[in-house]
Image (cartoon, rainbow, N blue to C red; front, top):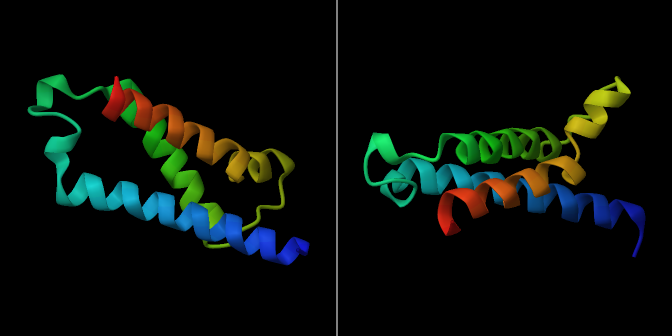
Length: 91
């Protein structure tokens, strides 16, 4: 497989992960917490940061600054989504 295939696959995975998070949070917010007092804000913020990074990566934006290229890469987005989802849904 060539590099272009893997890049397209990673972008597709990022878009799907971000879209799933949005769908769950918008369509069924009670899955996160029964009331506003029991929302795990720290883990939710981590998951949303990962989701935002996944949107940027999924749509194909590549920043010129090296640090921003790292921040908006799947190497950062996917672990943040995983950690946040674990804390929000499985903890």
